[in-house]
Length: 153
Image (cartoon, rainbow, N blue to C red; front, top):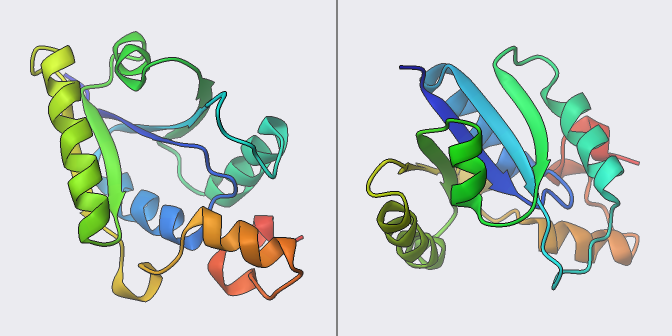
């Protein structure tokens, strides 16, 4: 059985925190699907096409990464992709509390067939979030140390 993980997110934009989780997860799985979800309630700074471009350029060195888009429930996407792991990054205790509930619901919805794997973001990147990066970008602040080269526009 292949170890296929889905790393879902909006990646608006991908940050060095996301990259840190992906880079450290690459040797753990046979394949990682970086899945760009669509949330109708959310207003995005970057188009879906631009976010895909950022991800493709940022992750091109990893041979076991696929980038896909999806809408609907993450568990349904995981089932469609035959993924048995959900990859999530944790920056702080608040992330853990939020993600723990979702992981438990996902296990319930999949009869225990989807396991969530949590990786702690490296300490030097734990303060970075896409929302902070977007805020800094919107005021023309210096965000470049928080994102991969592909996002430095």
